[in-house]
Image (cartoon, rainbow, N blue to C red; front, side):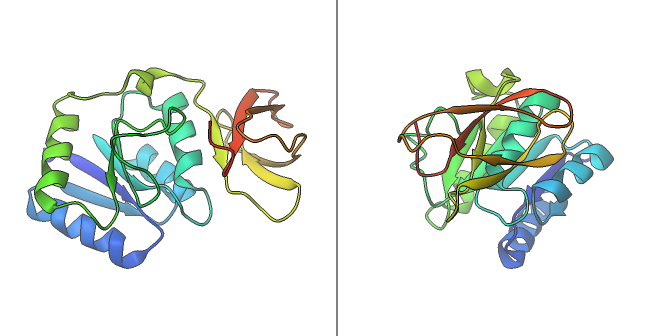
Length: 187
C-alpha cells in the first residue's frame, strides 16, 4: 500500500505541483484547499504525512496545526511558508519541519519527506495536545476562533493590545480552554 501524503494549500498551482511531484516519487497524494478541507481528508484517508502552507483562506495552516496536534499528534507535518526561516521556527508554529516557500530545492523537499516518514526529526512539541491557535491579524477587535476540540467556530474579542502576548478563551460550545496568538504578536 502506497504511503499517503496530504497536501494542503489554497493556491491551486502550488497544491497541484506538490501533489504531482510527490506522486512522481511514488507517494499517493491527496489534496485539500484549506484547513477545513484538510480535516475531512485526514478522516477519510488517514495520511502518513501532511504538507501544508500556513497562510490560507478559510482555516489557516496555523489553525490546522493546532487541531492536528490535538487530534492526530502521530501525523508528522511539514510546513511550507515564506514567512519563517527554517532554522528559526517560532515555538508556537508546531510543525515538525519547515521549508521556505520559493527557495528550496526539490531534493530538499524529498529528503525532508523521507526523514519525516521514517520518524526522524519529529519536533518535541509534536505530541503537545495544547498547541496554540494563531489567528490572522484583522482590522477590528473581533476574531473567529476554531475550537481544536469540537471544531466549531465562534467570535472572540481581543482583550489586550500588548505585543507578544498569548490570550486565552473558552469555547462557547464545549468550554475547552484555548490559547491563541494574534498574528503579528509572535512570541
